[in-house]
Length: 370
Image (tube, rainbow, N blue to C red):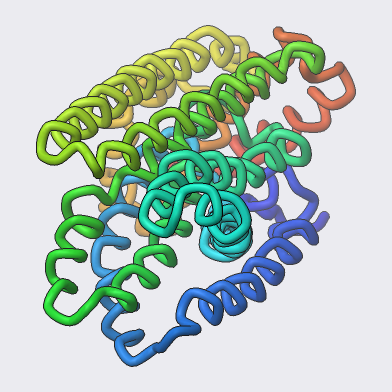
């Protein structure tokens, strides 16, 4: 019997190695990133090292915040890397080319240099950038639908691709900042408004995640709604730059409202997942993969963490890792039942996904429950 591969089972793949699609996406994104940086820095790269450092300063904290949302059902790291790479490479390159074309061919001849730049920022850029970032989320909906189990997943993927985009975009802004204005540019882009892109693209993520739990004929509306919301928020934010302090205040008020709304969505989605665990997993107690106290432990993030800490102290890191795999497999199993109930998974696909998860839970339980 081949050795169990927990990472592969949890990701729903035959092997733990990254899929061909992920490898191609990362490779393409890397090439696009190199081209995009060459275009963005073509007028000079004297301060590029400083620009890169400044752009990377807030990134670890922002990524940590996004990943902290992902504790109930962590997403595959390779897919997250591909999403980040798409934002940093493909999306930036597309946005650079199309925004520049819009400015040079449409807005500048029509409105002049200054108004042309404003029109590009307020009208062209929001549409182009949100479509470029959202394309990879639609790709997930098409090719990796099983990764999208609710709004939380959509927000995580949307924020990840947006952080990749924002990081490279900030490099170009910092590198182009005139002497004496770099500190102010960093404060505005790196400290005051680092959540703009994640907030906008999270709306697309929510729409795509909603579409993933609908039958094929009803998937377009939530995706289009998410793109429309993201584009509108982005456009209003960019347009507020000419309205002075009042416009900036209104933009931040709107952004705060969206942030609160996403927080409510995350809270409700977490409660939904816990409800799925409580509803669907008791049937597996007779098989011995769910113990008497396991349902209580699986129904709370705090209880899950406390259980891992106790197992780590008593049995070591290997047992704690087995418990973490058990917890994630149990969550995946509960969400599989939800997709089956919605008619999104047929009998054969249900069994093909369920049985490896149960096998992993049984093996893991032997390790941490001894």
